[in-house]
Image (cartoon, rainbow, N blue to C red):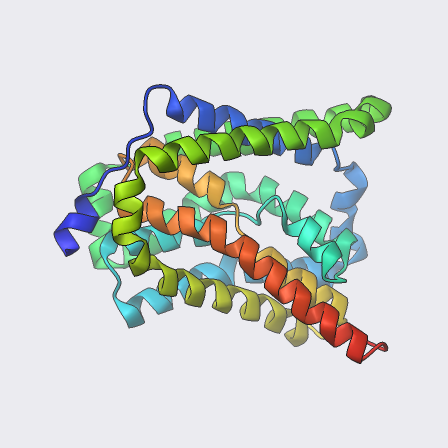
Length: 304
């Protein structure tokens, strides 16, 4: 089983990778249309919240992921998938869940903007650093010979350019941005969702044959991310709304970016892709679950 899952390769079909690139760039552009330069001023206005978010997202999550891997010793390709997800910035839907949960939406949006920009450098470096420390994953890296410079380039193209263009449009053509933001985001999400459905149907035997191996792993990984994010907020003595936003920013990851990097640089390595794909499904379920819990708590304790 070990050799089978670590050697498993998924099939995207002709042009599948290009479709994934375009759809993620469109989604990122739509997200950027909602961002303003003022969102980056949160570094000065809410330094404790931003610092706690940075530590939780880029230091704590990769480190706790590494510790979890050492403890559980999952298949090497699963371990690489977990490290990839942990190295990615917060997901595009984190702001939605933060608002729904009664979190600090302004802090959430600021953290998303800052984390996405930092991810151009932090994601490749974080992933390569932690994956190189664990012998089984380090062996896969040596076999595949990942070009770190190319990883920087892809992340920059998919995250950086759409982010900058979207913010420029928002700044110089705000009326246009406000009018078309929701449509562009919906198009990108539907486009990406359609691609996922097609890719899933092409690999359904692999997914059904191995998904039971990743369900518990992703649940535990995501649980630690959510609890860890909230705990860092408490450690920094932030208000409950800020703690909720930190939990969501840490527990809702941009697994779509992770999938893109896996298919681009890891020969569609099945174990990695299964982890990232199930993360993409599970963190939505988890987002609604914690939102429902916090909403219930807030009704019971109105002074929260």
